Length: 102
Length: 130
Image (cartoon, rainbow over all chains, first blue to last red; front, side):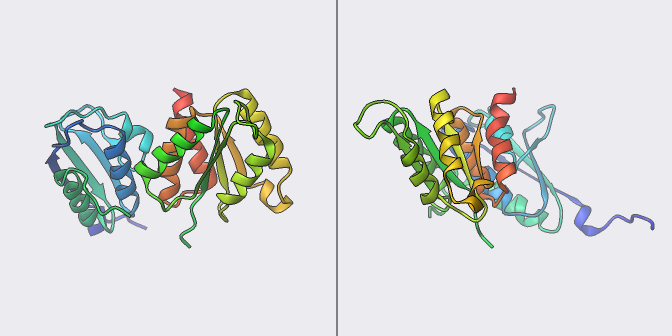
């Protein structure tokens, strides 16, 4: 059967400035990963123009990101909920990680 | 099902165990069950099998429990505690080979995403693999 390119395989991207005072340290990293894991899509993140994309659902990798304050963070996602995923993650970073506390 | 792997922290020091649990709760949130124990019943440094058993049962989830330990004795006593659990729970508890604080935070983050016990352990142990 031929594989045809489905809408859900589009790559959705977004980028956002990291305003958090301490950069991407442990606590924002945990929030980012937790949020990414709520979506079905494959999601990658990197500091803009970094050599490699990181799996946004891997806490170890995201914690190791070492993004400084004012860095531009890029997201890309593929999958059914890719747009929602990128939008939510961009919003999280733009809002300085003030998500709703349980 | 929204079950999440439970996290148990076992340290020779009650302060470390409690502090680690506090950090996990603050960073990851309260949806993951976290239990801790540390110190001897008489207030000194050490670990105690029956306190570990209580902690495992307090953090129990149908998905099982991941235990984070500090030094050797904590691991040995944790393994003994597992052997004394109800038989149907024994296969669902793992002791992670990870630094206690970082491992607990990462394990709890992974658990919060609904991951399996094996996945949670793998994430905690990623730190030791590097």
